[in-house]
Amino acid sequence: MTGYRADVVVPCYNEDAALPQTAPVILDYFRALVADPGNGLAGFRLILVNDGSRDATWSIIEGLSHAHPEVEGVMLSRNFGHQAAMLAGLSIADADVIVTMDADLQDDIGAVAAMIAAYEGGAHLALGVRNDRSADSARKQGSANAYYRLLSLLGINIIENHADFRLMSRTALAALLQYREVNLFLRGLIPTLGFPVTLVPYRRQARTAGETKYTLRKMLRLALDGITSFSVMPLRIIAALGALIFLGTMLATAWFLWVRFAHSADVVPGWASTVLPMLFLGGVQLLSIGVVGEYVGKIYLETKRRPRFIIQQTTSPELDAGARAQAARG
Image (cartoon, rainbow, N blue to C red; front, side, top):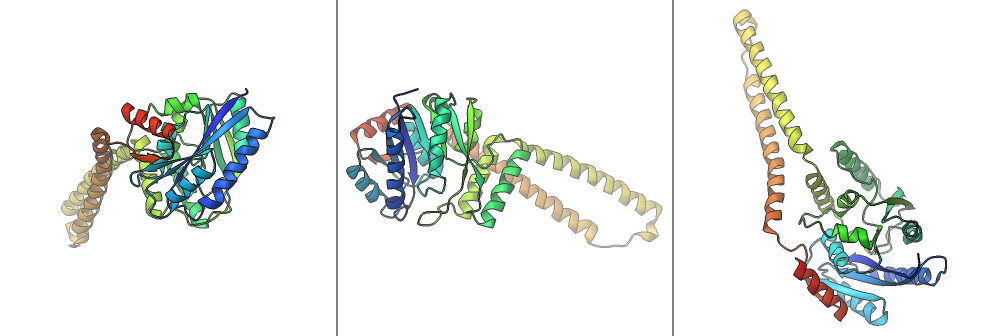
C-alpha cells in the first residue's frame, strides 16, 4: 500500500504553554515518516482545533499555519468540549488515514509507526492502549481502573486504557460520521463500528508543559456520558432495587404483625422502625429520579438537534469549504 496521505487531528484548549513545544515534535515525526521508504505515507496535514481557548492558543495556531504548510487551524465559536472539538477536526479530515491525539503528547507519538504498519496490514482501526501509566498519579490510575471496571460490569463494550489516541481509515471515519448523536463519547462509539481493529500498546508519558484540562468535574461528566450513552443497566438496577425493597417491605410487615399479635410484650416502641425506612425509601426514590432524569435529559438534548460544534473560522480556504460542506450536511 503506497501513496496515501494522513490527516492528524489535535484538539487544543488553553494549550499556549504546550503547543509551541509539541507541535514541532509532531511535525518532525510525521515528516520523518513521509521520508521513510519503509512505509507508503506520501504526505500529511496537521489540523489543530482551537476549542474556545481563553489564552493565546489561536494566535499560536495561526503562527504555526503561516510558518508550516502542513499546519491548518480550525477555531470553534466557543468551548464545546474535547470530544466535540475532535469531531470537528474529523468532519473536515479527508485523507486516507486519520490520526487523533492530544496536544500534550502524553500519548507516545512513537506508537504512530505501529499504527501505520497495522493500517498497511489491513486494519481499519489502530487503537493506542496504555500498558504503562506510571507517569499518572495514583489517584488518576485508580479512578481510571475503577471506571473501566464499572463500564465492563454495565455491559459496555469499551477498550480498556484506550482514550483518543488512534488511527482510522477513511472507511472507518465515514462510518463514524454517520452517528448523529449530540452526546458524544467517541471512545465508546469506535468499538461499535465493527471494522478490523489492532491494539497498539504504548507507555504513558509525562505532560510536556501546562496542566491537564481534564478536571475532576470534566472526568466525572465524561464518565457519566459514557455510562448513559451506551447502557440502560442503571435503569434495570433501579427496577431490581425497587422489587427488592418491595419484597423486603412485605417481609418486614409480616414480621411486625407477627410480633405485634403473638409477642406484644416484646415490642419496644421507637422511632427507628418508622423513621429509618422512610429515610431509606426517600433516598432511593431521589436517587432513582436522578438516574431517570439523566436519561430523560439526554433524550431532550438529542431531540433538539443542536449543532455539536460551530466553526467560526479556519486558516485556509480549503478548510472553510469543508466546514461549509459539513454545516450543510447537518
